[in-house]
Image 1 (cartoon, rainbow, N blue to C red):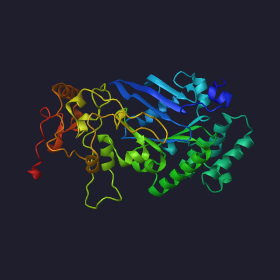
Image 2: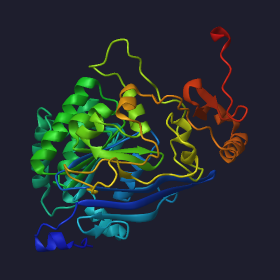
Image 3: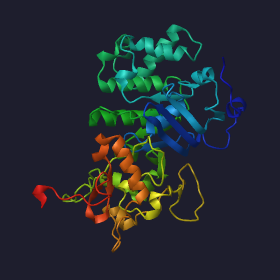
Image 4: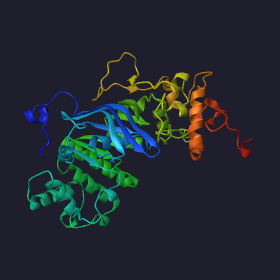
Length: 417
């Protein structure tokens, strides 16, 4: 079956609008323990030739978002429960599976986290690369082999012709990732999704792989979604960044603006959790206390409220929508002039963002209302092993355990008295 052709491709005319537009995407997983609210109505766009970063802690929904775009959610547990994913004029959510299969690799490619598990250990590199090429192009085996040699040479693998007969275990981690990049670029896709492409690689090899990825995608004009928890990676690779937390996008801005003026407490926390080369030597790192929420519970209020030092009473009950940092600004969702948006009732000031904690005289983070404490206590009774993982920040008094006496400060340890 031939995949339907969008108006943009059929007429050969550049269509106004982004290459990829995700609108109110909702992803759910059905488990024996209940429904996991993995992605909760996120929206973003990617322009042709643009590189967009998607950052956040493990479990925040980054990879699930992009598996949903690719329609590769594990079945039957995972499902797209709502929203639209429009790529080059096609609605991927409604596309027939046979048509989607034709689109993968050819128009949208993906580099997965671990190249060793992504490559088939019992097939040679030649078999895997030529299969990918011939699945989408009507060419001879020799032509696909020649293309594979060309691609391996492009990604910097020495003696590419002889290495085609090698198996994945005969390559180092960095070389396997280069093979994955070559396979992803084999059909010159319009969009590449790179899911933590430098995981498990040492720092030197990371830099080489990222530089290679940037060079090849810029030359081909390929759009990129770069998924990572490493803010240093997106700083040098992307034009825009979306920050995710608990299945929501909580901040989005151009890369220079996000680093210059982080405006969501979670983004501020991420930036203060990593060492800075230009920081004073005595400046301590400021960790984000607590743990991400249990996403089996339907989200109520701001998902970051239990860990936020800037929270107000409204944060416990009302989850704010993305809005411009400068109220009244015209909203631009993509490109170099994209508007800086945050989902926060009480954003840190520039001075507070610089030091990583509230500086307003007398300000104390709002304690949880009784209904929130009751819900947390009920969930902890059901799963007592997780009691120590649920921590609520209480201003300058330090962390408070939700399993304790309704949010009273923890007593100091014996050695700290």
